[in-house]
Amino acid sequence: VVVYTIVLEKGYQKFDSVVGSVALKVKGTGSACLNNAASDWTNPNCTVYDAIDLVYPSVELDALFITTSISQTPDQRQSICDGNDDVQACTNDTDCVENAFDPDSQGIYTGTCGSNGRCE
Image (cartoon, rainbow, N blue to C red; front, side):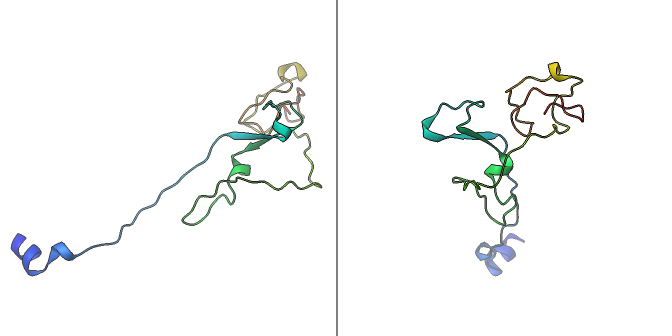
């Protein structure tokens, strides 16, 4: 078998293509501050970015694209919304901490309990 495979069939010269896949997930948050301001979540000169903002498009064939520059859209506005299911449950405003940041949230807490029973 060895003589046939290696010597007669020249098996040492054959090759095969590699088949495989890699999945990469980016987690976490980042911030950018204007005019070298201190990186503080409550600073109005700072903007908080999450994984959705940092990786665009979310799926790209044979590549990973990490955002290194962001263009601001002046007509786009941030607003206050009820927290999602990953956010702390609440029954009144005292259950929510104002200006706190949680990576599972959609931004910085306002200190108000939303209409869905989650901190805004």
